Amino acid sequence: MKKLMSAGLGLLMASTAAVSHAEDVKIGMITTLSGGGSHLGVDVRDGFMLAMEQADRDNVQVLIQDDARRPDVAKNLANEFIQRENVDILTGIVWSNLAMAVVPSAVRKGTFYLSPNAGPSELAGRLCHENYFNVAWQNDNLHEAMGVHMEKDNVKKPFILAPNYPAGTDGLAGFKRYYKGELAGELYTKLGQTDYAAELAQIRASDAESIYFFLPGGMGISFMKQYQSAGLDLPVYGPAFSFDEIILGAVGDASVGVKNTSQWTHDLENPTNRAFVDSFSKKHGRVPTLYASQGFDTANLILSALDEAHPDDQAAFRKALKAAKFDSVRGDFRFGRNNHPIQDIYVREVVAGDGKPTNRLVGVAVEDIQDAYVEQCKL
Image 1: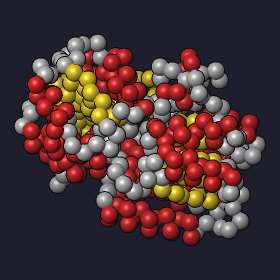
Image 2: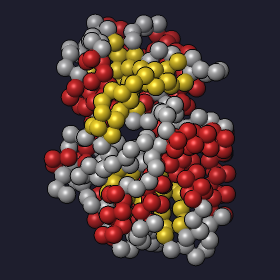
Image 3: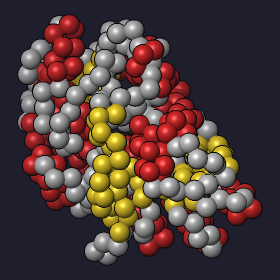
């Protein structure tokens, strides 16, 4: 992780040094660059800044700050960006509890917010806003898709667990929306938890025939290592957040055979994705995660909208964002009425790669999924 952080900070210095001092567009990025789960924020940032470097716009300045995965820090940083730096756009937040602390007040103040990750249900539904766009997904989507896949594959009695925060509760709600079979158990763990002995004991004592878990970042690494040590032998499923390339590298062969759902995968065949994976891998010496792909898409969406209007012309800039005229790593990209993507979700399988496990595209779990909260949105 220290090597990751060092490479990321070098990117930040190189990128900001190349920017002119006469910028007319300011973007404030608040993301997690330290502590547990920091690789999520590092990849969001690195994907975003790669797109900015490739575009080489001398009128766009990106200011980057670390929220340390703390809602109070994220809120203070947002206020500083808006009030002192006069940013036009905010982006970068990884965790849904931080998004809920920042986004509603920021967009009410007239600032645009583009999410490269967090997609809490309230921001898709009753708290949707014309200045809020989610470029990743709504929290439930990847879990809904796995519910569909496991139902189709006749997977029996999963024991399901997730952290007790908005993305965790949204996630398991999404899974249960489409998986209608019997559950062996359901648990909510502490956000940031690293010891899962009690949970694994409950799984062992249950009549579970499979496991579905959502534990992003270091939580997923800890769980899978302890799962292997516990000697349990149940098929494991999850969203991509539990099985990104960094997690797979840390967990090793224990993850081989696991199936997970994602709106993106590094072996998705389209020219934009091939170029992105190649350029990111060459620059950073690692395969990008879905977080990097989301950062890259978010930056390119912003750049496409800036080709049409300045954020000061809010109506025109908003219209340009909604049109989404950019080449996405996912292929076709479009927004629904509540400014969340309508998109395909894929199934991936973890396979033994060249030196370490990697994800391989299996197929489509669901096509053109629209989140479940759009009808609560008044846009």
